[in-house]
Image (cartoon, rainbow, N blue to C red; front, side, top):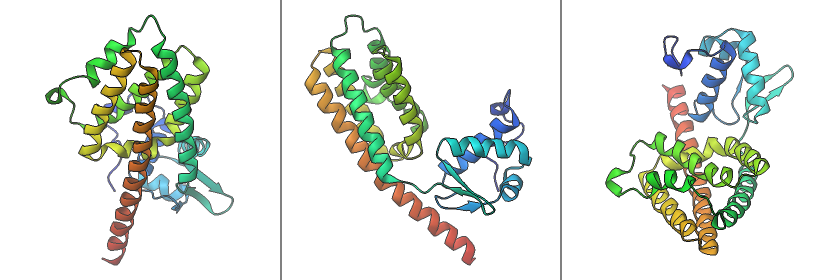
Length: 238
């Protein structure tokens, strides 16, 4: 088993054992190395990621609080099944927050934050990033900036919580090059509409962008789960 983070990795610097365990287990979940519905014991996982039980338990409890894991007395831990109904509701709430933010942003006088986003999303095609993991992070920054720039801290707090809860499927939107290209084009169109203070078109573009992403990640997630289960079946049969 390949470790998520090796002991000599710079990523470990300054992290507690519990933080390291948290990062490793979360990555296993995100990579579908631990599949939704999989059950495991603390002892099994402790050996797998080479960390002692106490910091591992702290990490598991943290992941439980975030909704990634469930615990059952006497039977151990389980990776939480993917609940697409709940994800749909979170995406709907995200649309409400972001479209309202766009309405406020179109009326803003001081909008210095636009320049930073425009540097990324209005760049020519040849200057676009190709590393999909980088686009994943930039996408989150784009959407969170739209909310943060309103100055409403409570909206930003709720939006940040939604971002964390949907990340397990949302990040998969950038495993396909056509979705990366679409993200650049759609973000650029949204920004142009905000710059021009065209509130209704900006809201419509944003709503369509998030709805399409929601549909895409559901399809990609189900396909990746199928492939992961097929690999597991093949390994068991070998």
